[in-house]
Length: 149
Image 1 (cartoon, rainbow, N blue to C red):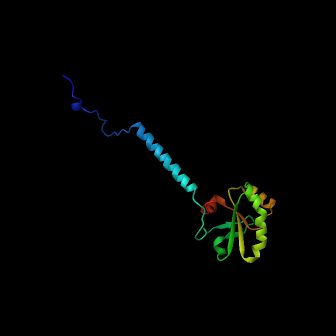
Image 2: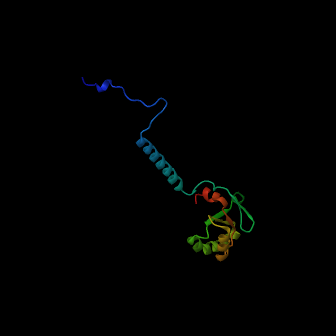
Image 3: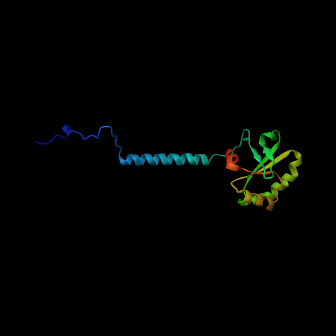
């Protein structure tokens, strides 16, 4: 007599245990990783703020003064994000100095926001390129994050 495969008992897992095949675990891990990388890429590619009110901030300048964007309401404000290690920043410094000289008495405010720099290098840079408008560090990169620099 031959055994009927349809009538044989099916082996079961121990009570209370749920087993997942190894390939399902690998697929889940890959999906989670791809999702995480996708979210990170999305956040990294957010565009700069280009409409609406500018995010407000208050900074303490390297000379000990204070600069608050909300206090400048009604004025034109040029915000320059820079760093001592940034080559293009060094190239634009003379142009910004000239603009500062040309517009400081016409109601245009300037603020240089030092991005991801240490204070010693930043102060040295300010002296080397002779920046004359207010300069302040972005401690904690909160302002550059708000402006998506």
